[in-house]
Structure formats: structure tokens, C-alpha cells
Image (cartoon, rainbow, N blue to C red; front, side, top):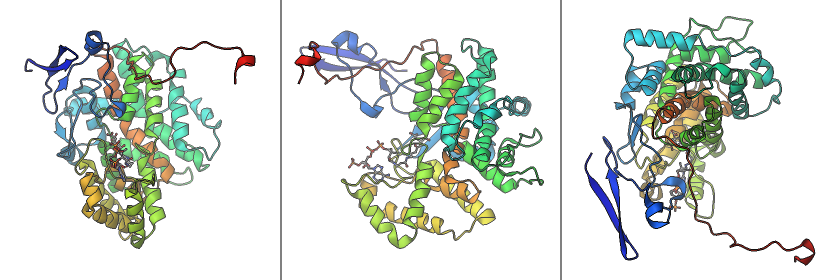
Length: 430
Ligand code: SDX
């Protein structure tokens, strides 16, 4: 840490604030005392230049296209670990030893069932409800079932709630899918790994044995690793803000799911596939690229651009390879959607507008094609994102709760509304 200050003149005063250095990445100017010293706030809608917290979990270098989970490059984790190893790393800060992994996998496996009364919860939804609506409702309702892991001041209860969330999200997600297609729920099986269990709960039917394709299970596990955490993105910031009030972890995760649903965030994988489907054939791409560049047209190329990455999203590269691997097994390597995606990417990466604005494909660009080839409907794409991101939300929530300096998040505003005025009787208005 270097002892430096940032100073600026305000009127005839010079204000000075400490600069804090991280282990890597941009330093920060600690302005927590700015209002006391100036009676002024900073102003940063969208938080483009604001660090909301200190964290040791995930590091992103948007200019270099670097993503590290606890210091490990995402490329290496996707190649050499499985999702539950990555979950352990995000939660506890180190990759597990063989014994630690066996214990952790055992604890997660034994929490994959949900309370049997949860089954009845689903029947309150219309069959055509969007699965993300079901996820928001059912995950929030977990706090009505698990009263023994709601006390966030108790480290043991925090750990139990964390394991329960990671373990039950695939079950709840698979139940949402089964409910939407009118098929019976499939219980988890303890002799299957995390991703194989999820595939079986989604695609097995009681009338016949379901054999998990190990290549698809490995591909899905890799997709979960890629989506596991991503610094202080919108849904993670939502979970942190909800948790800062002391809300229980299930309610906080439900808030994160709600935020992730938006098409500018986790909903982009569903929106990207819908866009590729609407484009339909490569010859129609120039029309859509022109629309994306037109300031008067709200249309954006879904799956392109990122608040942080001003280079290729490192996850997108791995996602692209995974997409090809999956299409070789269960799709059509000449899938017209993939052809449109490859041509759209080629055009966009050579187009001045996208180069100047540093708009590259992000993780959502190829994930939709992959998940569709695996048999998931587009409405389930963001649900899978939520299943994977739950460990990131939980790890960030845990880090915040365990931070002794933690306090409720309560931003201020620039008020530009009406100044004080008196109420007049209704007869005297107008
Ligand atoms: C995720 O934060 C995270 O880490 C998120 C995530 C995670 O893992 O949690 O990485 C997951 O959400 C990935 C992003 C998925 N969203 C999409 O693919 C939706 C399409 N992308 C855009 O909506 C947009 O790029 C955002 C929302 C992702 C980022 O928007 P920013 O940072 O607020 O940037 P901006 O909207 O200010 O855009 C900068 C310029 C603008 O032009 P100007 O006003 O400067 O002239 O680039 C343009 C935008 O119009 N632009 C696009 C574009 N994205 C930005 N133009 C066309 N197509 C696009 N996709």
C-alpha cells in the first residue's frame, strides 16, 4: 500500500483524500469523507467510475480481456477444474485438496433435494410462466422453509445457507423447466456429479432410463465455471445491497435473480439467440448492423459489448469452442444460427463503429446457441446463468457479511425536483 493522496481545489479550499492501492488493477480514491468535508456528493450514474467495495474474489482487466477467480485465470479453471472445485475456490479462496473436495462435494450432494412442500409451490404458477419468474418466486420462498439457516450473524448458518443455495438451485431450475413442459419432477440422484444430475433432472422421464452424455455434462460444467462470478456486476451488486440490510441469503439471491433477468445483463443470452433467429440468414446481417449503429434505433446487437471488457471477453472465446464441441455431438455443426453468429462476429469485428466503441462478443453471444443445441428452450438460458452465478453471489455476499467494516448501502442523489412548496386545497388547484 503506498501512502498517497488525491487533492483537488474546491472554491478556495484544497481537499485531499487517501489513495488506496489494490494487489493488481486500478487504485481507488477513498472519498468516504467527501460529504463531511464539502457538503457535496460525487455523481456517477451507472457507477462507471465507482468501486463499491473491496473484494478478494474476482479480478477483471477489461482492456486486456483478463478474468481471474481468486488469482487463477478463467482459461485454466475451465480446462483443469470442475464446477464444484471452482465453487470451493470462490467460497474459501483456495482450490480444494482431494479430501477437501470430497467433503465439499458430499455436503453439496446431500442438500440437492428441496422440501417436498416446494413441489406444491410450482402449481400456483401458470404453465407458460417464464421460468425466471418461477425462480424469483421459489428461491425467495426458500426462506419460508429453512428457518435454521437464516441467522446471518452465525457463521455455521451462513455456511449451511451457502451450501443449500448451491445445491438446490439446479433442482429448483430443473423443476421450473419440467413444470413448464408438463412433465413430472425428477429427483436428484446422489451418484451423479453436479452437471450430470442437472441434465438428468431436466431431460429424464420416469418411463425410461436416462443416460447422461459425458461430453455434454462436461460442456455444461464448463459453462457453469465461465458464469460463476464476475466482480461487481449488476446482479452481484444487487445481492450485496440487499444483504447489507441484513436480509436473509435466500431473499438476497432472489433479488440477484430478478436483476440478472434483464436483457442488458443475464437475459442477453436469450435475447442474443432471439436476435440470431430473427436475422435468420447471413445476408440479412448488414441490415441489423446498420440498425445497431443508428442512434435513433434502440436496437443493439445482443451478445456484444460490455461495461468492463473493451477487448474480447475471455469467456466468449472458451464459450465459442464449447459451442463447436457441443454442436459436433448433438447439434448440427452447420446450424444456420451458428453460421449467422460466425458471420455476424466477423462483420462486427471489422466494422469501424464496433472497433471504435470496442464492442466485442461477450459470454452471452455463443452460450445461447450451445444451450439450444443441448435441448434447453431459450426461456431457460438465463435460468442456467442464475444456477451458475449463485456461487458468485453467495461468495460475494459472504465476503461482505464477514467484512467488519460492513454497513448498510445507502447512496444519495442529485435532487432536481420541485423546491419546497405548500399544499393548496383541491378547490383552489388548477
Ligand atoms: C453480462 O457486468 C458484467 O460483468 C455482466 C456480465 C456478467 O458476467 O455478470 O458480464 C454478463 O451482462 C454481459 C453483457 C450482456 N448484455 C448484452 O449483450 C446486451 C447488449 N450489450 C449492451 O446493452 C451494452 O454493451 C452493455 C449493457 C453490456 C454495456 O453497456 P454500457 O457499458 O453502459 O455501454 P453503453 O451502453 O454506454 O455503450 C457505449 C456505446 C454506446 O454508444 P454511444 O452512446 O457512446 O454513441 O456503445 C454502444 C452504445 O450505443 N453500444 C452498442 C452495444 N453496446 C453498446 N451498440 C450496438 N450494439 C451493442 N450491443
